[in-house]
Length: 488
Ligand code: NAD
Image 1 (tube, rainbow, N blue to C red):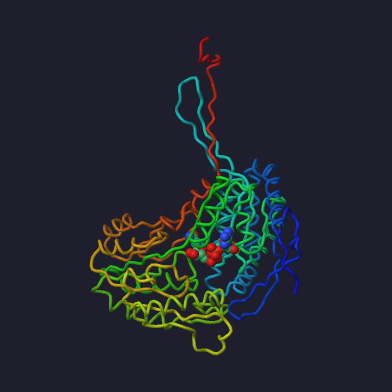
Image 2 (cartoon, rainbow, N blue to C red):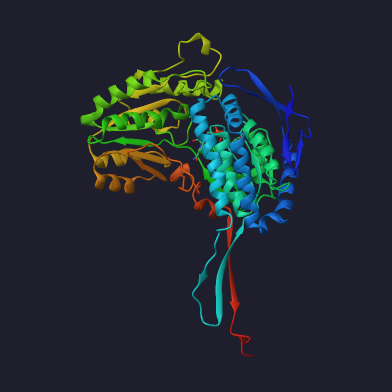
């Protein structure tokens, strides 16, 4: 089996220590490739290459960056089917969802291609003899560490604004899913993005990721992953006072008021938790239903959940593919039975689908736990699988209190026909993204990110450019006469 190499300083290289690690197809358990494992010296080389590239023309040429990003998006479109197939093979998720993700990754590059030459400073009012203005300058060398749940899309969320702003990058994909990021590296090369502007290193988070996050040559760390890892990253970045942005976990609420359109709420809520097999930071994993609608909603929702097709992720009829790994399967399953022990009612799901053809993959049935109380583990902790906690509420104030009653604050959805209530509740929710009467959260151009322990910093929107720029204030004396502040 050949070794997938890393992209460092414009060269495809093996790990300097000669180490490799396997990567798997979660739907079959097969090893699909061996991947070069970065040594710490390789990380040093990648950071040095990024520094050299930052000091070159890249950071000074916004129009050239725009053209390069647009070209990259075109190449991704030309290789769309191939990128989708590779992502499905390495991540195990259903192909229809992955098509949407790859499409969005392309749109992210298009969106930020358009933004590269629209990064404005401003002039500020000053005395007549002074000109005040600000420049927005790229932060420098960025370490970007991304998770396995949307491998290519998360890489795009990070790379597109950083490159548009004129930064250079060392990207570390998750060890479980490095393949599409490495393929993207080939397209980055083909797009003519200068050597060293993007470097891709592969290897474990605990060694390669941690070393990168603390590296003295790195100016900024952008991280997406678990809240616990985010906490580590903050500590690692602290010594160097690095800029950081964190996109972390979630336990997002989905509130169904009694006046909601029941059919739309059931259909939307189903997608909001089970898309991506629930391996989604913004998964609406808690459904709060106003009591008069509770039984009807639960019956319709559970009936549809049980009908979702779990299986071969390459089949366009599949709704839910495989979980990422056996260890993650165990974790998800453990949460389900803990929920039952704590008093939740298992309405449907729990465990593997019966089909023997699926025995070797990490498949999990869509699972509905009902009568959950807000303090239960399954209502507080991120499960990151196809498991939803359903609970009743009695009035709007209770719904808001329960919705806000976790340490997370990433996304929230509400279903109601009352326009005033929609805006009132949207304002009261402590979440970075709120949707009303639809479940879709992430659009290029629309800021995405968390409150509380779901992180800080915003991606996808123009706000993301702020994460990759420093503001420099410039003051110029325009009077033509020298100032003599001391008069001595
Ligand atoms: P993870 O935290 O285990 O790993 C994420 C990345 O960090 C990987 O590349 C990993 O190798 C690396 N890493 C791990 N330990 C590290 C360390 N000590 N130092 C530096 N790097 C380290 O997360 P995951 O399991 O890959 O992803 C799932 C998590 O990501 C979930 O919690 C999910 O909610 C979150 N997520 C959040 C968003 C968002 O936008 N808020 C989006 C997607 C995923």
